[in-house]
Picture 1 (tube, rainbow, N blue to C red):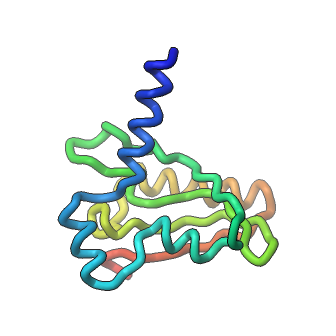
Picture 2 (tube, rainbow, N blue to C red):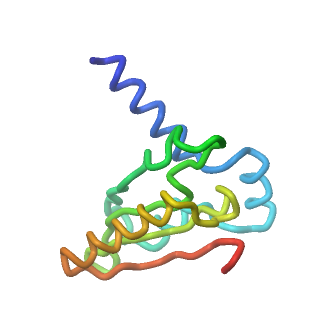
Length: 127
């Protein structure tokens, strides 16, 4: 059981690292904030962010697609709980793939079912 938990944690850590090292360097050189930094800057200081679907698209496609290219979750903004959907431009330039769309739609569904606002942080090749 411990080995499964260790593997799970390793996979989650790996997907949370974002795109390739080259993509991360280019992103930083452009002076852009990384996706999780943008989310932390948006949510209330010290409040938690509950990420949803970190392993979506993990080992599904021929090439890596960490977190399906978007980070989704629930956070508190100005004392109000909200769903957050944020493109990770370090993953394939922030473009969408079939599982990205499914993950995005699931986040919207969670927001609608719970009467929560849904905030979009867009950073992609088409934005």
